Image (cartoon, rainbow, N blue to C red; front, side):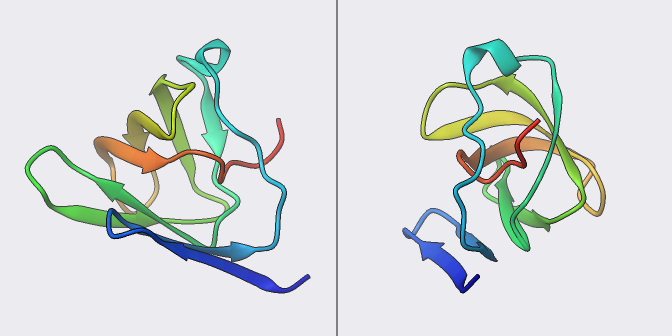
Length: 89
């Protein structure tokens, strides 16, 4: 698989080519594994941190392009991540 990356000005993602799982409202409250090599967690105060495979993210509100929740691993903070970079459950 070839690496896939995305940078839309709101954050960056680096991962092996997908497809990956898109979190929906049915995933609210679930802790999903991140499949991206690096996924930016954006906090309300504007700061960021990075999580990646095999770290996890608890979904507070899924179903849109951005998912709010809690980034575990190296972050340990609440924020939003770009949807579509989770491992299939």
